[in-house]
Image 1 (cartoon, rainbow, N blue to C red):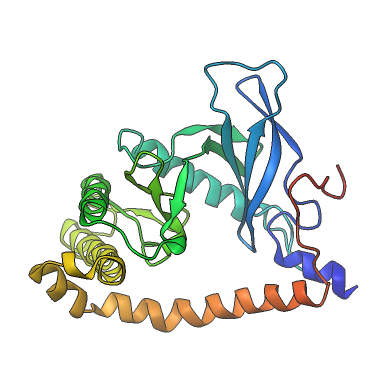
Image 2 (image 1 turned 45 degrees about the vertical axis):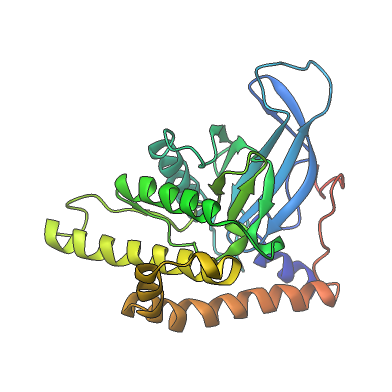
Length: 269
């Protein structure tokens, strides 16, 4: 019973990600599970060599939002909402270079996008100033679409592409805040600008760590002037994130939840 309850903390439950998927008439095979937590499971898929179609990318990513019920409470509605939300943002940002290219939806709670070859900032110790200039331009283009990224604090979401360009992945908690999304135009602009400043704060925080000599005076001022929104986010989101991650880590260490492995056929397939 405890083991079964542990799987309720995972978006796809015991079943996990599918071993094979078909995108654009091309079959792909699961190569690696990037992450599987309460809200979503994300995996890397590669062409299995059969019926190869030249117009299709060799690698794609499938993200499945919440399907599993939690202690008897159905949560597939949440998965559909999360999936629809992120798909709409990727479509809105489809003209922005450095944002994943959406390839289509998968089932009711999933979508597929083209894999971006590169390395996350989590695995890098230093970067040239030009990279952060590109990242700043990418963030500004996203902001021009009235979108706030909101997840810039995670180094694993920021990539140094194989072509040397800056890229961003995972728009699950990002928001589109149009001119009149929050009752009035003034309030919408106030909230959007505040959240966009938080994006820039985290960007310059990473620049301070990975390229300190390139941090400009106005960037230092923005970094040092932590906004109330950033402090509020830290107070609320950080403890919840630590609790969620700590619970999953504990259950995996105790063998209550079995860690998924690439190529492993999920139970129930």
